[in-house]
Length: 307
Image 1 (cartoon, rainbow, N blue to C red):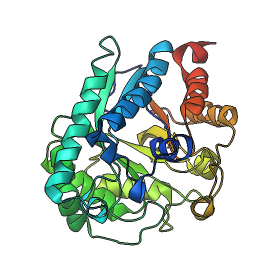
Image 2 (image 1 turned 90 degrees about the vertical axis):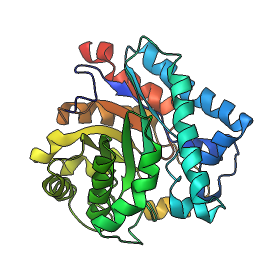
Image 3 (image 1 turned 45 degrees about the vertical axis):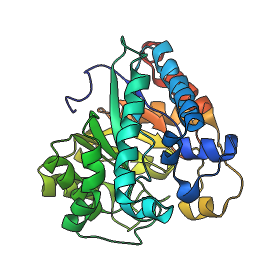
């Protein structure tokens, strides 16, 4: 496992930020982008409360915490779609990391990391705009450069290998540690049809094991739990699952939020902790909120594991 993470420490991270803001808080997010909140005092206050609620939970369970900046959509194309210039996008990415550092300062006795979060150039559920690895590196380079004051870069909801390889290349050029998180369909394969294990091994082969570790996100554990046999499993260090067992296509059509069963989800996390020896970072994705993270923390915290 990566030297980024303290050996023996289990880390929480946050839950489904965007679905929490939209469905629980009633906040409109054009293009599903949370990063504009960083620019408004009321938005910053809401983000402070959100991250502190999650970090307080980690503290109560004797765990570390990864502060993931709310920058999943803060890349060139998505930013421009809601009226941001490149220089404005670069500035808000820097401001988001500064906000995470501000919140992190409240937890001096915990193992913490600040991560610059990036998302795919296109749709997270399907690879609609496929790039070569070099094109992906060039595309993601400005956002990664803006994360100079973060501890690492985490790429979430990546759905094909070339974009993952390009992100690793860009992070390496910026001398930033990087984590790659793939999403899967209900059959445990990437949206482009590639086997999860094959995708992880291909990225490692093409980048000389460039990612610090891999994660899985934006899929329910039941979608991929039976596809984790193989040496690639030792490279999976983090998990941010969806609350719902529905497919991406079904979720796209939903007008109401499916929060699933928080306790059953936590039980799946406990099973995955036993299946994946390197699993150290636990959070949530679409549909999850503080209730789900509380159940997960109770299931996988050191005290719970000892019991």
